[in-house]
Length: 219
Image 1 (cartoon, helix red, strand yellow):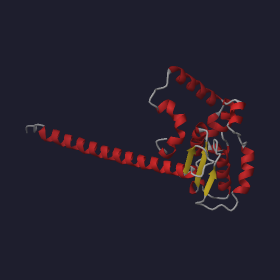
Image 2: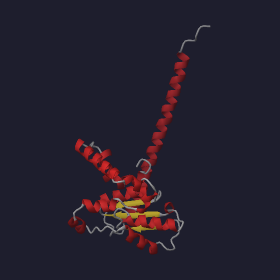
Image 3: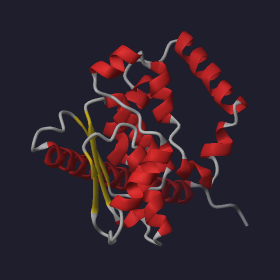
Image 4: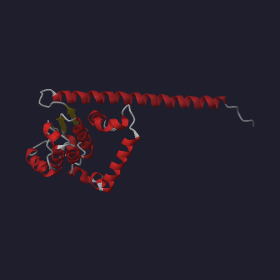
């Protein structure tokens, strides 16, 4: 996420256990290790470690399995299977031009974004040329969508927001938040660069001072 600070706020529910103020306890670390081993044993890298990662949404079915049916129904959450998403976007993306927006106000883990990106590639359009805007009331689903945006190579123009997307302002709010995060990240990069330059200058000055102070060898 260091390379994509714009997605960090959206991805925070997945990142917070490891980068938050409170370090994870031993039980959490052990559970994460077991999950990672299980995923690797099941061949997860054969899916996400190759171009096949563009064809699947691992997070969508995972959230379905982790949540009780009652909780999902109460929240109005429905996972769209990949083949249905592919069929939907084949018609919806006809005639789309680079630079246009792809908007999903109930984006979930981003399954329709994945299908739309694949449809664009089939039309020889780079998904990175598009603006992707997605919102959802479920912050964990949005965090998964942020991770998927990287896996699916949607490009640098991805806007994800958490909140009631039935309001008229959710897109504006999400875009403003992304702009603010990028501004902060740019300031931090500039500060880090300045500190690095100053540190280099200080080391050079110290080295020169040490060299001048050293006694000349006798000839």
